[in-house]
Length: 558
Image 1 (cartoon, rainbow, N blue to C red):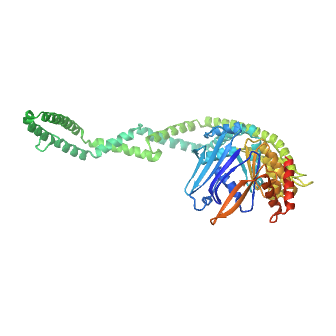
Image 2 (tube, rainbow, N blue to C red):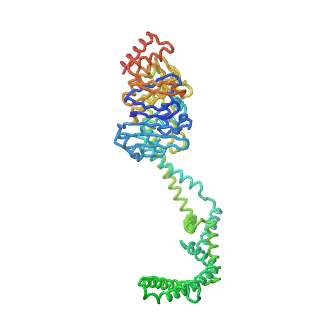
Image 3 (tube, rainbow, N blue to C red):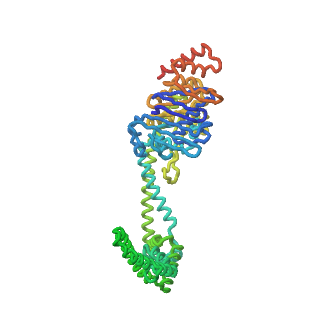
C-alpha cells in the first residue's frame, strides 16, 4: 500500500506531502491545477521517463519519494529476489533528477533504474489516460491472459523459452550445415592448412613476453655495454678520479687523526662499510658487463621468431592463447567434417528431439491459455455488465500462429459485441474511446483479484463517460478498493462521491509564481467539491443538496 508521497521542485509543485488511505482515494481539481503532475511524480519515482523540464524553474533538482507498507509476503519475497534492501515491511522508493543525472534509491541505498522499475512493478500498477488504447493491439491481449494465468503458466513458459532457444540454435546449425561434398573437402583442406601452420610454429604460452624482453636487450646491447663499462670505471679503483680510489684516499686522510677524537673512528667505520659495498658493487657490475655479449645469430633468430608470432596473430588472434584457442577450434571442426555423415545424423536426431520437446512445451502453454481464457472471458463479461454494458458479448479467441515462437504458438484476441444481434468483432472495430476505457477497467478489476499488487492508480479513466455509466464505474472502483488500495484522478462527481479519502488539487499564485497544492478534504469540504463538479461556476443550495445526496447514496453502495 502506498502510504505517502513527498514531491519537491516538480513543475508547479514547490513541495508537497500527501498521506493516502488504504481504500478508495479520489483526487479532484480544476483543469490545469496540476493533477497530472501528481501522477507524473509517482511515475518518475517508479523509474518512468521524464523530461529535464520537469525541474521547477530556479531549482537545481526535482525529487519524488514514495513510502509503501507491503502487506504481501509474496511481494516481499519477490523484492528479496531482486536483492532490494528491505526494512521489515516498509519500502521507500525515491528518485532525484538533476540537470545531468538521476539517482534512484530503495530504502536509502542506491539502485539501478532497472532494479527500481522491477521493484515498482511489484508494488503499484498505473493505468494512464491512454493505456486503454493498448487494447487495440493483440499482443496486449496475450499479455493480459498470461498475467491472469501467471500462477499456472510462469514455470511452463520458462520451460518453453529454454526449449525454443535450444531448438533455434540447432535449427541454425542445421541450416548452416555443409551438404555439398566439394565445399566440405575445400573446408577440410583449409582447416588442415591452418592447423599445420599453427602447429609448425610450436607456440608456447608466455613465450612472447620472454622474446620481447630478450629482443629489447639485444637491440640496445651496444648502448648498454658502453654505459655499464663507464659506470664500472667510475666506481672502480684504477684511476685517481674513480669513486673507489677517492674513498680509499679519504680513509687514508682520516686514519692519522683517529687518535685525537673517537668520533673520527666512527666516521672511519662508516666509510669503510661504504668502501666494502662499493667494492662489491663494482665486482658485480664487472660480472654483468662480461655477460653483455652480442650474438648476431641469436639476434636474428629472436627477430624471426617474433615476426612469426606477429604473422600468426594477424591471422588467428591477438595473443598466443587466442591462436592456440583457434587451433583447438580448427581441430574440433576438422574432426566433425571428417566424420560428417555421423555428425549430420546426430544433428538431425537432436533437432527432431528439440522440436518434439518444443511442441510439447507449446502445447502445455496452449492448453493452460485455453483453459484460463474460458474463465477470464466470463469474468470480464460479468465486469462489463457491472459497468453498464448490458447486452455485451465478450470472447477470447485462441488460434494457432502456425509457427513456433519463444512465447508459444498462440494468437490471442479479444472480441466484443456491445449490441444485441451483432457478431463479436475485434475491439478496434467496435469499441469507442469511452468504451475502451471501461473495458480496460473491467480487465483491471478482474486481474486485481488474481494479483498481489496492492496499489492501483487510475488517471482519468472516466474519459468519455457520464450519467448511469459513470455511476457504474464508481461502483466498480469501490469493489476493487475492498481488496486493493485505489488512487484515482477524476472529474466526475459520481466517482468523487464514492471516495473513502478525498483530496483536492489547487493552483495559486504567490510572489508571481504559480504553485500547486494538494490537501485532504473533510466530509463537508468533499460535499462542496462534488457540488463544484456538478454545478460548474454557480454553486446553488440545490446543487449542494444534490451533492450531499449523491455522496450519501454512494456510501450506501459500498
